[in-house]
Amino acid sequence: MRYSGQVCPLPLGLLRLALPLFPDTSPVTYFTDRKAFKEKFDLLSFYDQLSHPDAFLFNPARSPDEVVFTVRGDGITLTDGQGKPLVLDFRAGTGGKTSSLLPSPLLRLPLASEAGFRLGLGYLQGVDGVAVETSPELQEALKGNPSVCQQNPSPCALRGRGSFTAGLALDLAYATPLPEIPGAGRLHLGVRGLGFYGLAHLEAQAEARPVYQGDQISGTEYEVKSFLSYPGQGQGYGAMADLGLAWTYENLTLGLGVRNLLGFVRWSGQEEVYQNGQLISSTPAVRERAGLAPAAFLNGAYRLPLEEGSLLLAGDWALAEGSFHLGAEYAWSAFRLRAGFGREGGWRLGLGGGLRLPGLQLDAALTTHEAPLVGGLVYGLALSLGF
Image (cartoon, rainbow, N blue to C red; front, side, top):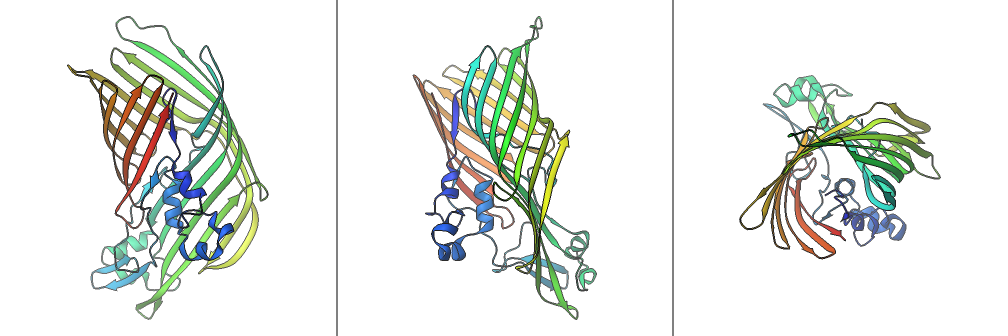
């Protein structure tokens, strides 16, 4: 869910991240109960909830006990500790290539609004560039030629990567209708400038590869590279500019938006390298991106009047990411019923409803998405409130 007028999605997912009642996803448990944190905190569960801040996940993805490489007559297989095949084509965000300079604000406090101008202070948070991928040699081994892996260190590697950003943002936006096109509707133009102060930035890359003893696999070795920045250990700041264009004609609306059309972001922090769980190196480092890093989005909506109520059909498509969402809403009196599906790091499905009362809007949805790496469905609850 995203902002629409005065409707605000409630970030229920932050409860799982902030409250030690949920030690599998809350890093706060590290400070309140070290034993519970060590035994129950799960990095994949943490990522799954972190990437869905607007929904409370009932069963976030759980990390495999281990990554198991097995040599078979028809090639190599990759499974978790229980023998379940891993999902090797997971993509979310920009698919392993972090191009977006900044995520969209999750929460926003309006400070001023007048004649098309809008000023607000917000909290932004986002996960980007997440991917699970296999090296070319491992792809060949999976297809039936395991001999390409038989050396130490093995060129056959399963890799995962991603980034997380959080910060406080001050944004100034302006929107205005353009002159009407006779018989062809009207265009609307919007621009936004945003400056931010960074609260946290994490980039991580992990690799798992088999260890050979002769022509048989004797185990798995791991390497993790991370970059972490937060106040007290580095600093983050930057700015960006967005542009949007919308066309309306009767009951049809089409829009094109470009985020991070121009921007600059700089993070200073600490870069660390771990091998098989042991810290190998820790050095100061800087991450800096500037210039063009556009992320374009297409969206559209059509409202179909019915004898009883109306039907709204809507969709959006993130061009760079290849993700899309399609949905429908039936409105009757004060009630709303919704259904939608899409693809964003796996298939997603949502079912929900809402209530419109004078001065009050309440919406609820049951969401699903594919669990990263381990597969299966994850269920969540999303709420939004409007006045």
